[in-house]
Amino acid sequence: MASRGKEKELVLIGTVHRDPDGAGRLRRLLASEGPAAVAVELSPYGLFYRRKNGRRLQRRLLREIRRLTKTRKVSWWEWGQIRAVWAQLAVPYEYRSAVTYCRDMGRSLSCLDSSRWSKYWIDTHWQQLLSRDNLTSLLEQIPENLRHEVGRDYQLAAILLGDGNRLMVSALSRKWSADSCWQQRESELASRLERLYCQLHQGSLVYIGGWQHLLGPSAGGTIYERLEHLQPRRLLLNGWAGM
Image (cartoon, rainbow, N blue to C red; front, side):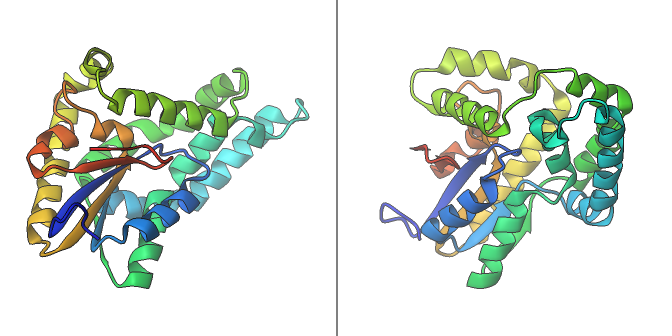
């Protein structure tokens, strides 16, 4: 429900997309927040493409990894880098957990991202992502412990979302904030989210997306900065909470 006496509230939940514990964490957080509506950083095209092709691409990934690791006598599951690729091909846990909550509670769910941008990203990056050269490169790296790496990502996010870190935020965001495609996507996401918020009569609207969208001030035009006039409340999926 909306907090601090507000009739309605916008809540921004920041995630690490490759979080192996994300589904359970998000289900618990949604149950605690009890939003009236949920929006997810996923496009209709991205959802359709993963449902249609995700398992086939995961099988392709497994075949290639088994060829590359058959002389190493280790499990590909030990490489957090490979598990992150596997997760990217699947329907995101953010959507799966949101679907479960909205179905059980009778709430509305919106896929907010741009299908045009999603199609461009999949068409231009996924073939390279699954290429033998890329997978070979990943397997030549020291295997990452995915949970440890995700924990470090959340620690960084909490630092950058805390008070007094404008210079760090500005330095980190300089590259993507100069990207016109990024700016257009962030603007579209913010506009769609604000329309959903304006349509809400009471309760909270929860947005679930990558934690970078929550950065600000001095972050180059993130969703949070574009919607700061709505006084959104920011949360990280690992438990950090801020204004």
